[in-house]
Length: 190
Image 1 (cartoon, rainbow, N blue to C red):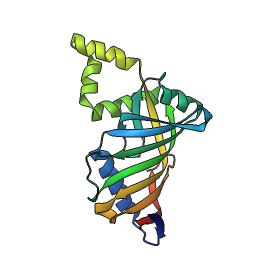
Image 2 (tube, rainbow, N blue to C red):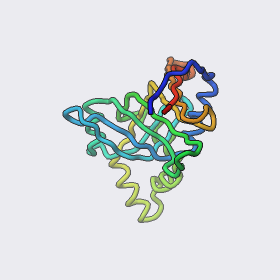
Image 3 (cartoon, rainbow, N blue to C red):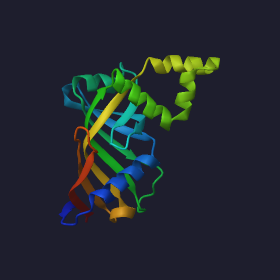
Image 4 (cartoon, one colour):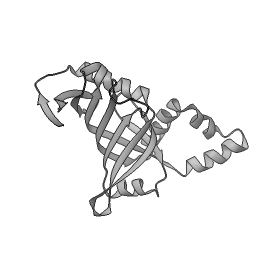
């Protein structure tokens, strides 16, 4: 099988709707960081996101992937439902960009976004019961990380067609809406 470029373009709005749908339908991501010796390291985490395509995850700063990010903020992330069946109308994202630990106001925004998506997290952080207080103490030792993808590769066979990969650039402008622009379309073929 090979991947062939196609001349087929898709509107930026259609691409953005597809990305939003995939993000909304999934809560887990797999992310790859660069370990010492330029070796890959993979980790799985729950994620939250904003309409401006800022993704957040919560993790232990002493973990391997967080130590890797401190040395090299380059991150690749995949988001997809693992229950999909081969030959069906599959959907998923590959995202590429920069990720750093949040601090100050950024950490507050990350926590607000995360708590809105994961209600048990918000409940635990209130710490009303002894079990919730124990869970909150553990979670307070973690930190939020902010991932800014610059490029996204989309597989959304229901939206774009079978075995079609659409790549888009994420353009961030100060004081305006994040723009997603079509870059390329490729077809996986025998």
